[in-house]
Structures are given as C-alpha cells and as structure tokens.
Length: 384
Image (cartoon, rainbow, N blue to C red):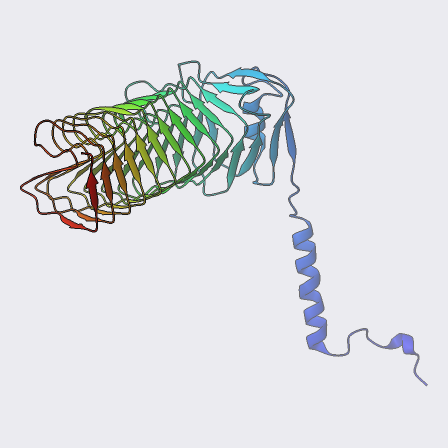
C-alpha cells in the first residue's frame, strides 16, 4: 500500500502551470504596490523642507495629497511646476495665497495625469509682456480647479489662467482684477482647449480682446457664471473667435468695450447662448452682444439697459445670421437700433419682445435694418 504522503500536490500539469503563473504574478504585483501619501506643508517659506515646492516635488501620484498646516501667503521665487498627478487641498482662498510676487507665474501644469487643486488664492503672478498664464498655465492637461481665487495676475494672454490644448474643469472660482495685454484678462482658451467653467465669477478683468474670457478655435462650456465690470477693446465680458461655446444661465453686467461687444463679441463663431442676461453693458457697437460673420443661437435671454452707438442690445454685421428666440429686449439705447441693429445681416427673430428701447429720430428704437432682411415672426414691439 502506497503512502498518501508520496502523492504529488498537482497531478495535472495544466493546473500546476496555472498555479506557478498566478504565484509569479502575485509576487510581482506585491513588490510594486504604491501607497498613497499625505504631504503636509508646514512653512510659508519657499524651497525649503516642509514647503509647498518640496511637497510638489515629492508627490508622484493622483492619490498623493498635499495639505497645509499654515495660513497666510507663500511667496514664490519661481513658478511651481506640476508634471505628475496629485491633489492639493488648501484651507480656503481667504486663508492661504500663493503669490508670484509680480515676478513669476504661480502654477505651470503639464501632465496627462489627474491634478486637483482647491482652496487657494493664486495671486500676483506675472510673466511679463511675452508669457502666457500669469496665475496658471495648463498645457496638454485637464486639472480640476475648485474654490480658488485668481487675483491680480498678468500676462500677454490669459492673465488669470491660460489653457493650451487643455480642458480643465473650473468650479466655484473667482477671477478678479487680472489683466492681459492681448487676449483673455481672466481666462484664455486656445488651440483645442475646451474647459468646463461652472459657478465662477469674472470681475474687473481687462484685456485687448476678451476682458473676462477669450475662446479661440474650440468650444468651452460655461454655466452659471457672472461676468461683471470687465473691460476690453472688443468683448468686454467674453470674446469668441472661430469657436462654438455653450453658455448657459450666465449674467453679463456692467462690462464695457471701446469698440464692440460690451457683454460678448462673436467673430466667425456659433455660440449657443441660453437663459442668459445682458444688462448695463456699454460699447460703440452691440453693447449686449456683437456678432460679426457669426451665427449664434440665442434662446430665452434678456437684453436690458445696454447702451451703444449702434445696436444697444444686439448688433449684427458682416453677413451674420443669428437665431434669436424667446428673448426680451428692454430699455436699451443707441443712436440707431436701440434693441437690435442689423447691418448686412439676416437674423431670424422669433417670439421676442422689444419694449422701451430708444434710438435717434427714426433709426429704429426697437430694430434698425440696413442692407438686411431679417425674418421676424410673432414678435411684439411697443413703447420703442
């Protein structure tokens, strides 16, 4: 009789081979397990142990978290570069500021990995007259930025934030008093960038084009945002060129443009604008919205108390063909076209109300048409 102890543990060679493979995989993976780490910033000094710069250099995974045991202002000697995934959790923008000291950019983010930044003020970033993104430059990356304030940053474009081949998610942030010598005082989106911007405020920013926001060659999604008292030559609140942004539930108030588009300027663009309000904006042409060679779709919007030389509420020129539906134009003023001015354009205007708009003499308090044949259906004009 044979002893049972002499039997092989695996009598079938396939089962034995599978066991060996699984054991090898287990040993291999167990040797490469990466554990999330938390790095605590314990000083407001720059580039020393316990600093934010040191924490960023140590973090190498999205699961790694950088937290703060300090408040006040961290003044940088050079920009903070992020090339790995990580999470930076600040104590709140009113408690902690990261400052470029008017000498350098604050954040430069270039990574395909996930980056989360929240609860910070990003201030006084400055890259001079030749750089982009004074506060933050996102290149080929899609960070999530939440509950942050971008203030007093400056650049040639994208004073507060510059996105280049980048699609960040920006929520509950404030962009105030940022400036750009060319495009996008608050934010500039170029070269296939498509950020999602939600519940944000753009206040007091300035640029040559797009005081609050500038969109080029792609489509942003902007929801529940306020553009207030931004200034530019064109597009005080927002400038869109060759773009089709989706703009929902936004307010454009008190913005100004020296030339056109106090609230919004569209050039060769087809934005979809829904449930938005344009109030108390000013410019030479199209204080609420100016369209040049553009075909925006504007639905359920209000244009009120805007003032211009031509087109107080909306100005359409250069073969523009906007579709305007269920909108109200009230108490706007202009030399011609208090509510709407159409010059060599073909707008389609449906179910709209024009009330209490003013213009010079007989130059169209409600609507003025020059070389244009608008399609106007079921609209009401009174008190103009």
